[in-house]
Length: 368
Image 1: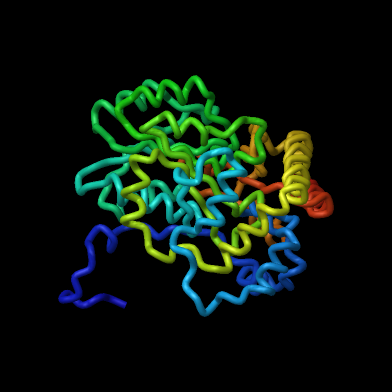
Image 2 (image 1 turned 135 degrees about the vertical axis):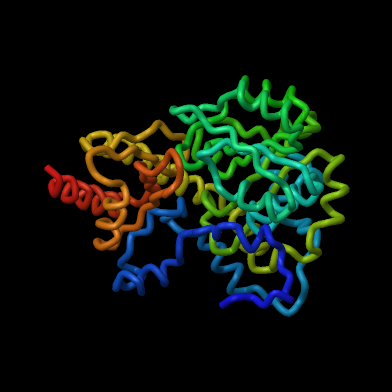
């Protein structure tokens, strides 16, 4: 349907490409002709073990639905403070890390400004930037997904970009940002936004505490992956105090709903169980690395997250995705520069991985 000429929407939005997220389990099931419980969903890095039972208990006993939530999420921020070892006054909670990315852009960007991203990486940085009237300067990663530091320095100097968005472990390959590289980047006249969505699955320490003494560092975290709260959207950021006073001005007053708040607090009170879930996903990732490497048509990359990216040889990558989907197994294929011959698979339970590997061997045999 064509919009009438008198309806003057933004021309940049009219011409922008649509972001394509993965669909819900119910939509996939309907499209593929499966019952939702029979699908194996390994395409969005979700927690296959589910949430803490304490979450369901908290939601079942939630009596504050008719009342607006605490706009400062003080109880949750207190628990997060204990969890990451950073004072609560440095923490801002959002409806997923996505909302915090938007808030950071709103805080920094004026028309004509630019941000730097380093693809292949999480695509929401580049997706959100134009909505805040920022242009995107792409500094592509090296073939091994490491950062091209010289190119980043040149981009900062040439474009005077305000923000550099990085993800560690990086999505989609799971590589970590070396601390010495971060130190180099923090010397530049730019604010580094470090997305640690998958840090719980790595052996690396979070950089959250460095924010307290580093005025140009922001760290973003989420409870979607390790805590299994993807459907409730709970993220948080660690910010220098000089930024916090302005973030309070621009965030929506009641941005985190009472169900998400209650679920997050219940999760943080059940850490021993959730750490068992994390260990299960790490073990699943390690098994993925080993068994995918044994398949002649896949070349997995080293990873520190709950997923494995593999280069596909001899078989079109999209066909692997399609053939697995017909078997009720969902994985991620990226039709993007540098990734068209790659697939990403999230760590599943032992039973899910058994089914996956059987299917992959059958698919491989079709091309022998």
